[in-house]
Image 1 (tube, rainbow over the protein chains, first blue to last red):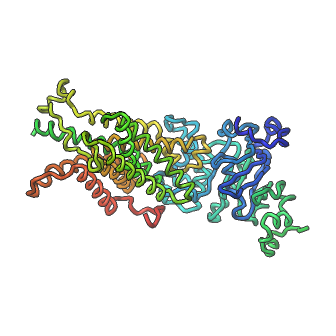
Image 2: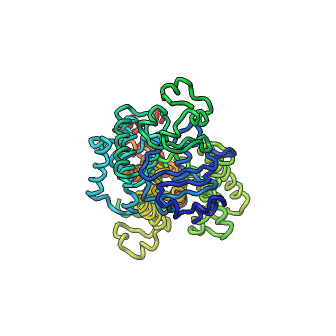
Length: 269
Length: 308
């Protein structure tokens, strides 16, 4: 329970039981790589069955937020609750899609093997990959339109195909909460379509999706909730309410060009 | 050639083969993790570890030396991590600083302490002494079934056999965590794997292999076996499972051919003396890598970095 030892005193009233129906709740999370915090005292609540975009300028701590929530990078302080439980007890309910560039695609392995990695928890240390596991892996590849590539070496894929394989691996985790780090970065239009279709089908199945997102023009089409951060939280809420010019200006520090604002066709103040 | 071969060559070849396998198995993961240099680092920091173990126990006790060497390896790994974080430099440079400093420290220790009575010297550390590990009691192939003759086997053989078996067991047992955490460390952590511990266990396993091999065959062969067979094997296939099998095959090939060439090659060329077996084994493994780099089926890969 050490994860909760450093909760800020004032927040104690919002203990774990109260957050049991929230797929993800973050309270007072601070993360630092050096002297300057990358994420400062962040609060975040992800609603069940929602599709949430985490947006913010470069270096705002979007990816860091995901990684700290997942325990990939250490938190300085704060608590994270996944369906009302500490992360260590809820790992089976989380699936993760890292940034495509975070791994070496020259690694000697095939597409199907990467998808099977998503089942590592249920396979255990020495469990053999059986026919039913392979069938499920093929099914996951089918959902992202990559079934015909199962035997390919991963280095032979295009960037978009690699991203789809990562999504298939997350599907193989069979989770309730999906955390994706820039799933649409540098992918072709067909892949973007395929990924958003899968994410929407996950939502239709009652699962929850959180994605770090960089393309402001698609936020309203793809997501129903938004989390704007720039080291600190700027805004959080329904896209129809929180995704407005004032919040964007605050998050992006006025760096957002006026014509982008026009493109987004925001109502303004 | 039966009797003479069993007495003079069988044990050195077996030790060479086992040492090569023990190093090549963890070497596959080290190379894929861009940590190949760590094999180099370990085989150097082993020296101060062994000297300290000798100074503490006062004798050439192999197990004490192994413990000392493994301890030194752990110290080196922590030192590398420390230098990398505090100095904010890239891991390769941190390794370079750590292992040269520790090796130099080992040389100083060796000079200052009275180790003249035992065969601890820098030359031995580099090249080992494979050729001296002869099986005096052997009279022929029948000696393999003779308990009295078997008792006279050089102790290096059972030791490296145990370590080779341990690396094999380690690779089989931790296959899945090793593979996943080597490919995608962040994802492995999300699955709940203790990636730091996996990385540390790999380095310790490599250290144990390096120490056991070092005693018999010297550090040159250790460095070569960590890198050359796995690197050549990577060029043969696009599957990790197959790569590891190829690396073992290349390791065995290098050990056997290298030993034979060292022992008989100079004679065939009209020379008189044999050359260093460890040096020749390392050379053969380098040639295998060179040939693989020129002719292996998977040397051109779309995902491969341009400078690799």
